[in-house]
Length: 175
Image (cartoon, rainbow, N blue to C red; front, side):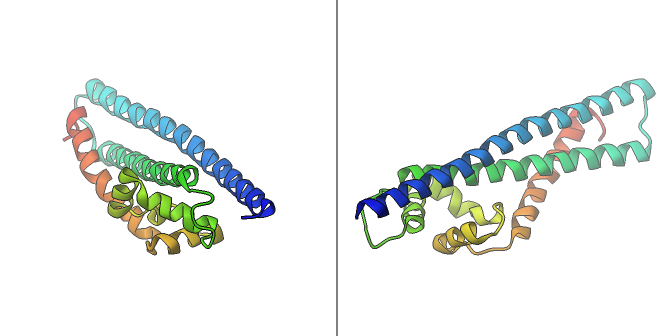
């Protein structure tokens, strides 16, 4: 590998890590914010129930819808956070000189597959379900062999949010 190719690879890695770092930071802040929103909704519904003794149907459906939507967004953000974390770890773990015929994206995909935890998570929940498609990301999706529709990821998070909503509503006393 000549010096110019090595410098381009280092620059590409740096750009990818900057992007993934930005996404991880943003998702972390959003997760904390939506957790506060969820706790606020739970506290409001509990105070309404204590104050009124009975909750009207409108208050019940608004509360349950708010809890469901917040739980859904939290699961979605958590899955995206995991996907970007796996990709950033793969960028760091990709060996720069191991195989000169492989492009950087192929080395990153191989590194992601070789991570024990990352491999299990990608097998259960493919990252392409939660990361938006685009030129850079779609190349990774093709390399990972995880071509799928984002609607599956949205449905999966909704499936997680339904039992969570039921549990939280029982805990607060709405059910």
